[in-house]
Amino acid sequence: MKTLPDRFANRFGLEFHHLGLAVSAPAEATQLLAPLGYNRWLAFYDPLQRVNVGMWLHQAMPDIELIWPGEDLPSPIDNLLARRHASFYHLGFVTKNRADSLDAMARDGVDIVEVSSPKPAVLFGGATVSFHEIPVFGLIELIEVSTSIEESNAEAVDTTETT
Image 1 (cartoon, rainbow, N blue to C red):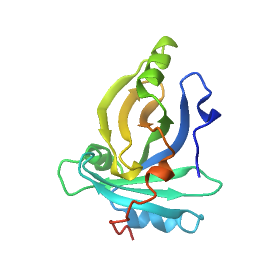
Image 2: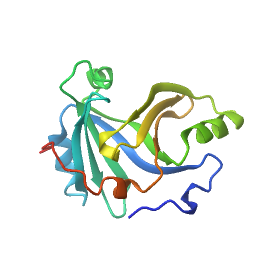
Image 3: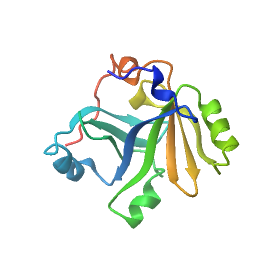
């Protein structure tokens, strides 16, 4: 179980959480993830994000969030998937305070542009997420939490079949 002590001790108050992998459909990606030792944790349709999301966990390798188009069109990943069948496209970071983290990056001269305003995310137990483009780095997702993500999802129910 992840907890919040000193893992946020860097200047930006961020902890790496996951790699975001956009896919047209999850079945092909899961054919690689499962034999690598990944276990599916949760999968949901998120109406606010307008995508299906599923988290795959591993004891020794980075966690991977699978994202595939949802029922509502257009999906935020449609343009990306029109160019590639699958693509790692964001890095997810946990923060205790999004505003403080963004302010710290700005003070260090990091050029950061908000791409998606803060919204609660079903996959993370309602924790607020936002997406930001850093031109010299790429897209990051900030997950603002006050408790561990695992604790906030302890009662969550898996509602989406991904295989």
